[in-house]
Amino acid sequence: MHYLILSITRVRLTRYCHTIMKKMTIYKKSLRYTKNFYIYFSYIVSMIRKTKKYRLDDIDYKIIQILKEDGRMSFVDIGKKVNASEGKVRFRVNRMISAGVIRRFTIDTAGGGLKGLIDVRLQTNHDTSEVAGRIIRLEGVKKVYEVSGEDDIVVVVEVEDTDELNTIVEGIRRMGVISTRTRLILKEH
Image (cartoon, rainbow, N blue to C red; front, side, top):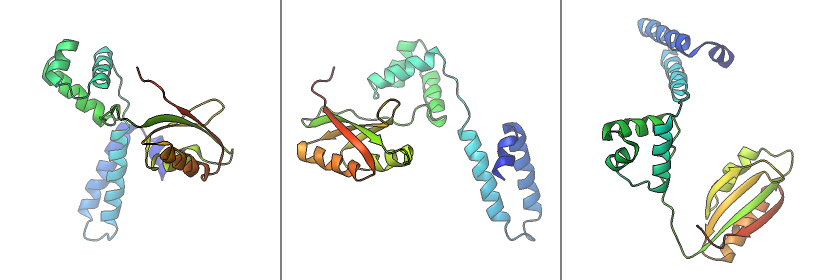
């Protein structure tokens, strides 16, 4: 079933799903599985719409850069910086959010604790994405990156003291890794 869906173009698939949904509503009383079938196709159509490729232009890149520097800046102020109206900026930001280009707005704190990087090397038979998903759930872990090179994963941590850092490192080591290397961040610029 999934192979069929992937082989049909987006437009044809959308039309196909709508045709099936219309037919299903006609025979709704006679088919017991209509509701589940409808939910399945609705889910597929929604996933296809969410995976649309969104091409960024220069204004989008400028908006993203401004939001990276100051995520609380108003759309009016962003519009002044990129020579666009507030409505245009709002539309572009909402479109980038719905397309998955902008995933979240975060707060970067300047806490008094320790910040560090943990390089993780996995065994060859472990799924990198699965281990990264388990690492991100550890308390004190801020970001997890899958990288190329000698190491497979780089973990960004922010903790209060070395005991918390050691707890995170020990938790990572229990996940079937070959080695870890921890570096402390001394100064941010």
